[in-house]
Length: 248
Ligand SMILES: Nc1ncnc2c1ncn2[C@@H]1O[C@H](COP(=O)(O)OP(=O)(O)O)[C@@H](O)[C@H]1O
Ligand SMILES: [Mg+2]
Image (cartoon, rainbow, N blue to C red; front, side):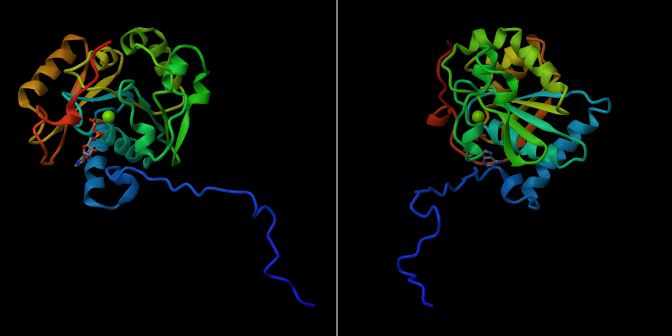
């Protein structure tokens, strides 16, 4: 018996398929190099937060910075992965940077309905929860609807969402826009148990960092401290990446 290999086809071979390679942002070091030195720095941050928190508080944590491009999104993602390493700990990251969302992209995933749909009542919370690929760490992306962030963030639905998530997760991390150009982070900070300010050494203007802490505290935020990322870079005042869409 002979087989005509040239003609034989496995079932389904005619159906086109695309192999999608997931490209996770290189700064998500807990994903790429979990045993590396840089990952340890995020575990140290996690440990500090956990020690601050003997009774399970602060459980909702806003991650922000003075200006754009200081590493808020990378920090909140790394922190989420680090928290998920702890036993009996589940973390969720909410991409509250509705103006320049980046969480799904940094995870190498497509944007999908998320916070804007949930907060406008267009979708139940559960449908917005997505997996990061690591057990114990989920996220909700910013969503696809065009909204006015100022109005949406002030709504009591934000509190309802945070409270509902606290039933299921040990830590709720909120990524956010920077403090100086827009008020979103201030509005959110007052409703979170704690706020962490990311400071990129040598690029964060000191004056603006101080101003951010002042703004946040005036709005009722519990500023827990700063997380310093030590990297060299361009002067934020002249760097394209630090531009931010105007307040709407
Ligand atoms: N730990 C880090 N070390 C060095 N560079 C970093 C680090 N985290 C982020 N960056 C750089 O900063 C850029 C902005 O990071 P991102 O997390 O998107 O900032 P933000 O959310 O504050 O705008 C990244 O694209 C990367 O170039
Ligand atoms: Mg960001």
